[in-house]
Length: 65
Image (tube, rainbow, N blue to C red; front, top):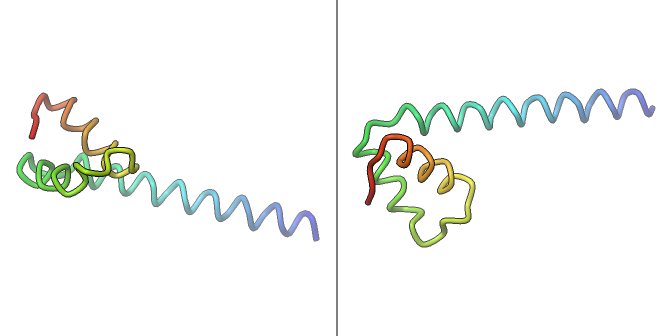
């Protein structure tokens, strides 16, 4: 039972990491205007993960709201 649970948790972690990578890639793949729109949506909640990714990508591209 323990091995089955450990394997299931490992698979869940792998799926979560894959989704996270896909989200990151989606944000970095946005055009500047779309990235600014996304950042504007999350401007009031900058502590959220999506906002952090958006603002980090804006910093990398040297653009701002």
